[in-house]
Length: 395
Image 1 (cartoon, rainbow, N blue to C red):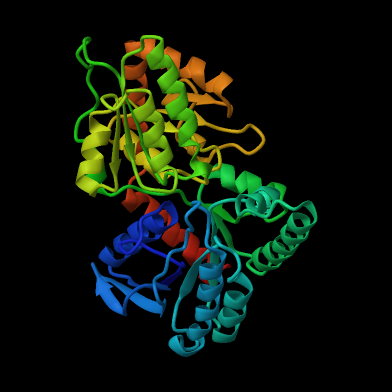
Image 2: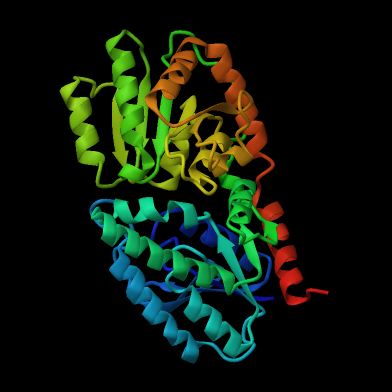
């Protein structure tokens, strides 16, 4: 099968959840003998690990200094998609898998695919309609009238683009449910899968009793990830005598401010900021940790949480009941971890419980490791292929 993926950024050129998903599936499908192309922004046309990268435009920063999407970069990528007119022949691809975020490019892609007679799948990581007003405010548009107008324009473009793709694929059950509430139901759900090297070979064992618990976070250090709340809560508990370590992996606009909070509290020996690390080092940090903290409630799936679980970490997941976190697909409350509502009054008791109950931490670590085993890339790639086949041969 000849399979195309369309996404503005992709690993190995850029690290992120959407990017990681495409790269993992593309490599696995290529290993299985399929002809896989990724249409993206990258330095040049080249083949990496069997996957053919097709350059649509120059690589540029897709997030600004405040950690939110760079609208100008998204617009330029949308314009670069016009190059598909010349890069694609009619029926050249059996299927084109299009990342739905950001959504500026969707009408143009739908038009090109129709002209080229190529079946299209729209992969939806989030249901964005209800969150567009907050999305506008995050970008600094705080004037009420201007915010309302811009949110309305974006909502119209989102409805148009999403509605042009009848074959929608959700990355989690929670995303599928949210899309259904927007009246854009998904035709299927295919969650992420981890490659063999992502799994720790042995189930977690009890730690030494004198060893303080280790918490860990991995992701962009931006306001939307709410890492500040985790740092503030743990600093307060440390002030009251709690002992622990907190490893923080990632870069972003909030790193300097978070480091200053820790420095001012004299807690540099407890909080460790690692920045960007290699995959091997990330897995090593996960393997020696007890609990992964997912502080951002707005996650379509959270690959980082699943990766931590595969190394034997339990989870503390923040989830808004109005729009549940996608990580709840694989983190059951009081099974693989704890799930709490946003806000310090919910998070603090959860952290206190994890700090004082080593048996609970071990239970979560073992259950999390076992649950992660069911999310292997070979199994999920087979599901994705089955979905593609249904799009190509609907009858």
